[in-house]
Length: 287
Image (cartoon, rainbow, N blue to C red; front, top):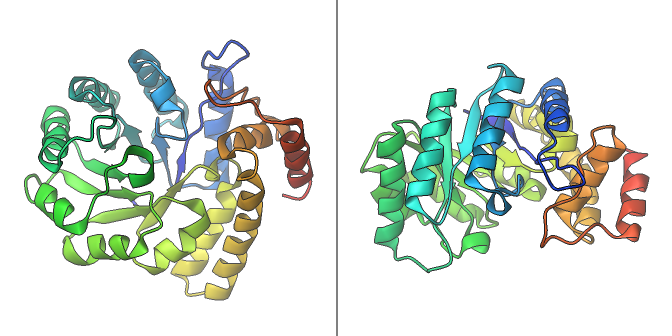
């Protein structure tokens, strides 16, 4: 449970249904790129725009397509504890290695409610849990003190997916919780996260440039900081263009240009503009 994990996108057809053939191609493409694992059904996968049954279907397909070659983490986060537990049980049945969950959102739940939500999932599924810390996405920020309290309650808490620019918090998780595994979340600060103690990274742009980030991870591990910086800077140049038009839409367009038909993002995401498509074509020609 370390290294470069792709946060898988979900390909859709023109009717916004799961494109299973493209998903298989996407999984195999990422395996060929050398990624170390998959984070399935997270924000990148548009999970919050999918039904519980669709999310379970994605779990099953990725398990089938990956054929046990890499570790799999199933994101089961939901506003409802019962839904999260139901999906966690499905992941366990399928043989996933761990589950993860974003904190429950919308109602501004107090810390004790969030803690009980995670404990309920862990005790229900009886498998390792990675807390998905995404404060800008759900309004709840995990601190080292809160994490220490939660982790002390059950040994099945394995780590944190830290999708935040607060790298001091990432360091605090590593320093203050024995045995914790922390994944950096934002692709544009992958190297910075590793330098602050992250054990690996989970990211969306790895869907189409996983090999670049695998090389970055290997360069950092080997102490070749100059090469790691070069690779990070190259990735940031690409990401900065995508941010102008919508990252998920651009990632899907890029993969479609590379031969894996990804279709649109689900509404209310906007379709990629013609200017965005042109920019992605220009990037695809140089990647």
